[in-house]
Length: 138
Image (cartoon, rainbow, N blue to C red; front, side, top):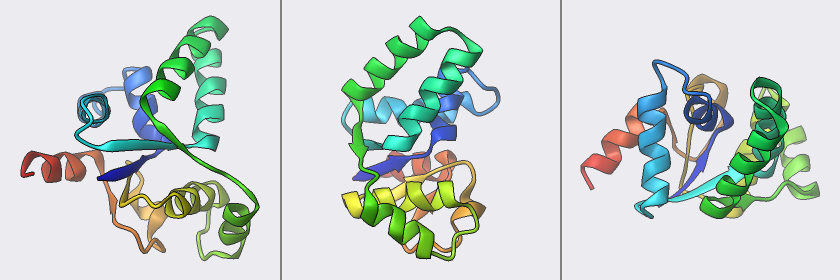
């Protein structure tokens, strides 16, 4: 299963954000064990670098980004993705870019804590709890 993981799920893990960290960490662990094939949008990586640098420090951000690049595939952001996002019904352009980046990469689903932001998605969109439940029954 190819899963695009939203920025908020990764931030839950990296910033140890309670009460979300446990389920989000389970999803990341499933990527580490190759139970799922995890993808991050290219814009997620830049956002994570900025936020980790701001909340921790530059060296920590660089270290975490290198780990993520080793662990996850990266879904591209290119002119096609941006065009699809601009023409979409999504109210938030950043969410649209993330979604179409994953769709163009061929992911099977997206995992986010903000499912309502993806109401125009044709791919399945799960919360970490929902995806974890699916993985447990596999």
